[in-house]
Image (cartoon, rainbow, N blue to C red):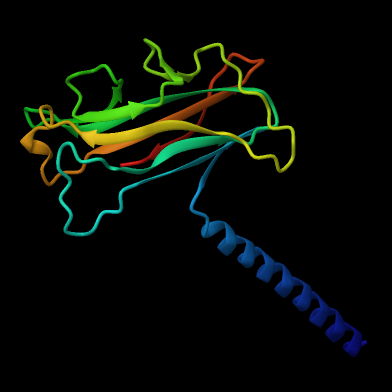
Length: 198
């Protein structure tokens, strides 16, 4: 009887050990990913892109291009979707006051940032850029393993020389992209994620 109990305990320990090893291995594999998945139910987009690699002693000057690889999304959803983005900037204004999460749009000549948003994104007065307009539907990714087209978002980003005040020197400025998507058949937008790119 004692031998049977000992054998059962050993078997349970072995099964538990393998389970913990597999869970740990999966965690490390997921943790090494350089991409960001934006997911909500059956809506799934892969976000990619990078800024120019900055060294510790690098000074970012107005007019210097900061985008190394354009920021893109890739549709991996298995339903028809619509997607929109909002770009938010946090910075110090010319009076030295910190402005947090101000909505950016390209035609704002007083912005401290020069951001080039891909021409397929249509700006609306509600502060959002809609991919190919408010009514455009991105078809589902139905073919398993098929290569999807990457949708460019931001192709260029730099600080504006005339608009960047001295108060931003030595301080942190941020740029966030707020992603929202919805199933094409429904009217409610869901925030997928907020990606800090600067």
